[in-house]
Length: 246
Image 1 (tube, helix red, strand yellow):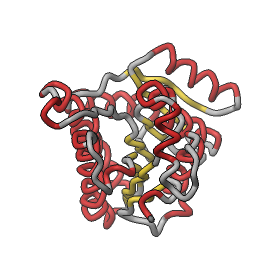
Image 2: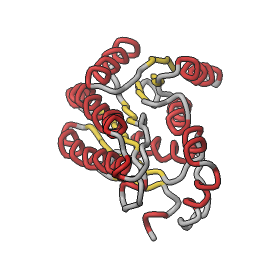
Image 3: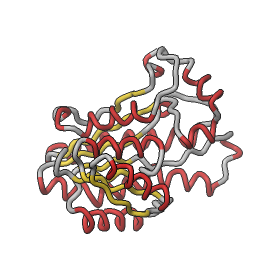
């Protein structure tokens, strides 16, 4: 990935952080984004300490303008974007009748609207250059029904359909678009929201019988972003310990 510019949203922790680090290890100039400047700078410092190239751009992604501003700022800072990782997301859970409209709107804004307008701002440039990669981060629960996850799961199901639509739209112009659908993963966010016991209970339903580490999801993302996956277009790659296979 030497010489390529990679924009990773939600890269200050968890899967995004692991992905940003791995892409930098493989030679990409990584633009780390997130809301927390302190954590973002820590990620950049860690990448530079291992000989990688990275910069941080603070971004609270909720609107189309936020997405366009981030795309423009990344281009100005690092040059044309070769790899876009749509990882930033929030999870809203609860009974359908109990979900507040503001929470519903917030979930769809960052999980669906922002990736939509980021791709709209970045993919045309990739298509003009005849190359580019977009990897969207979904979730295993976008593939099956679970009580209490209607908002989050449906937002990610929308992202998966967008993945296929973008593959059809931009694939003929040299831009590959795919998605990764993780299962239970040990991150700061999931540990705080669910607790280890609940994560382990979820993981116990899958053949692997364990929680994933962020680096394992990052490896799958990096595979799809790499030239070795040049013939892979429009897939949703489950990285869920086999949960959706049984």
